[in-house]
Structure formats: structure tokens, C-alpha cells
Amino acid sequence: MAASARRSGSSSASRSARPARTTAAVESWIASWGMTASLPVRPDNRHSSGSQPGEPVLHRALDRCRIDIKAAHAREVDRGMPGWGYSGMPVTVDRRTHATVSTVDVPAREGFAYWRDLICATFVRLTAEPVGDRHFHGRIENVPCGAVDLSTVVADPQNVRRTRSLIGRDTEEYLLASVLLDGCASVEQDGRVAVLRAGAMAFYDSTRPYSLHSVEPSSQLVVQVPKRELSIRDTSGLTARALGGGTPGVVVSKFLTSLRDATKEDAAQTAVLVPHAIGLLSAAASFAASAEPGACAADALARQRVSDFLHRNFADPGLDASAVAHACNLSRRSLYRTLGAEGVAAQLRRIRIERAKEMLVHATGKPIGSLAAACGFGSESGFHRAFREATGQTPGEYRRACREVGTRRK
View (tube, rainbow, N blue to C red):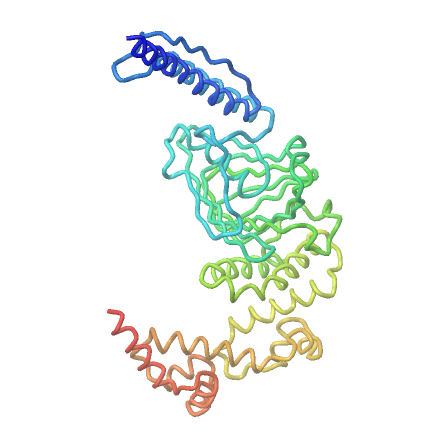
């Protein structure tokens, strides 16, 4: 009897202690957010069937704490400070991996709070507000390429700000560039405003306050690179300047979007292009600041200008070094120095072979002679010779091999 009473007393004490232990754990969790809370638990017997004593009181206290946490989150945002995730937990994005994050699976009422946390985790600490009353939708696809982060941002209208209080809480310094792909947006920093349309780009510096605005749904490629990787130190003259048609911004924008697409397919192959990307960014930044770019940046810009011209005009069989140099405003000597050991002929041949391989696969009914002419080769025999030298196969053999592979996959 006494033993039974002791067991009953021990069991009752254990049940009474359980809510207290739970309460302590919850209070510890709340304290980890820099808040304090004292949760009341009454170890009485007023509970529903199957519940432990005190649980209803504990649950009501937790509900109050959730409300307190959301209110604190709102106050943090009002002060220009990033909050916690929409679920009350921090949002993290691994910027070292190719990943896509969005608001698609988030309840509509929580969508923008979640989006605010996503942009902070992807870029730098920011505060943001939606424009209009519609439910907000946003998506970020992050493609890391060495020291350069390439993030495609598709989002509804919003105002994004980088404030002084947020700047002091970050350690890394970045130069960022927005390449507008669709829509209309603006970048404001250092007393200037750059209005961007599709194809244009503008720089902004994470070490000083800036604002990004869009009044319609937009799509942009955000390029982020540590300032220590660049040769430019003073960025105050180059920020919030629109680089559109007739500027190096067009060349740089096209290269960066191509680099993003190629990196998504094969990151290992594009790693060698990172120095070239940084050189192009330096050249565009120097142009924005009306400064003479350094030798490396100038060479990178000239190299990309030549590459773009060759890709646009490879079908011309009469294209030679003199025509390329003239079109790109370079002397023949500067042209060969810019292209290095590969030279004009070798680069042009490589572009033509790559185009021929695409046509052999997709234009299956096109005769080999017509295909050779469409790719800029002066004769069918010259095309056969160049193609076999580059691939180890004749054009006909290559087409048949690709057809057989396609048949096996089906």
C-alpha cells in the first residue's frame, strides 16, 4: 500500500514536472531571439482527455508569444532591420549552390514577409515594402560562378532599401549590378537615379544606402561580386548610372546573361570565364565613372566586343581580321593582342563548327552543301575538312551518330 502510494506520488510529481520542463525549453528558445518571456503553467487537472496537466495554459501562452514575435518582427522591419522568417525561424539560402526559391508555396498573407527574408539571405541586409494591394509573388534563381553570384529575380512591384543601420551589420563589401531583362525599374544611390529598361544595367555599392524601385512586374539579373575582387576602389562616381544602348553595358549585359545560362548547364566549364566576367564588370564600371579602364578591363571589353561581332557575322564567308578590326574600332595589332594565341581565324572557325553541329542535329533535311554555306564556309570540301579536323567525324557521320543516339533514347 505504501509502495503503491509512493509510486502514485512519484507519477504525479513526474506529470507535474513535465510542463515545467517544457516551459523552460520554450522560454530558452524565446530567449535565443533576444526576447524574454515567462510562461504560466498550472499543474492542475483541468485538461482535456489525453493531455498532460497544464498543457492548455501552456498552449495559450505560446499563442501569445507567437503574436509577440510577429509584432517584434514588424517593429524590426519598421526600424530598417531584417526580421525572422515568416514562420518565426530564420530563412537561409546557400549561395554556393544553384537553387531556386520563391513565394509560391507560402500562404498569401505571409508572402511578402517571406520574400523580405529571402532577399536578405540571398544578397545583403535589406528592408522592403510591396507596391499595391495585390498578393505578392517573387522568385529568385541563384547561380554561383566562382566569385560572381548571378541571381535572376522575377517579382511583383516593390520598393527595396539598404539603410545605414543595415550596412553596419554586414562584414563583406559588394559591388552589385542590376541587368534589367523585362519591365521597368530604377536604382537610386549617391544622389542619382538610374531608370532602367530591358537590356540596360546599373551599379550600386553595398557600403552606402541605396534604393531599388519597380512599379510593375519585372525580371532582372542581379550580379554580385566582392569589391576586393575588383580593381576599382572608389565607386561613388559610377553608381546609379544607366548603361544602355551605345555603352559597354549592352556588351556586358549580354555576356553576363549568357554566362548565367552556361553555368546552369555546366558550372565546371564556365569557371575559366570568371576572370573575364570580372574584367568586363570593371570595364563597365570605369565607363560609368567616366574613367579610363585598366589594361585588363579594357582587354576584356575589347575581347567581348570581338566575340559578339563574330557570333553575329560568322555566316559571311569573306569575314577576315581586317574587317573584324575595323568593325570593332581596333588596329590589327590590338585585335591579335586581345584575342591571344587563338587569333581571329581559329575563333571564327570554332564558332562556325559549333553552329554547324547544331544545324546537323536540328535541320535534318538540309543538304550538307547548303549547311556549309549557311555557316560561312566558302566550299563544301573546306567545310568537310574543317569539321573532320575539329570533331574526328565527317558532317554526315556526325548527323547519323546523333540520330542513332536520339533513337535509342526514345
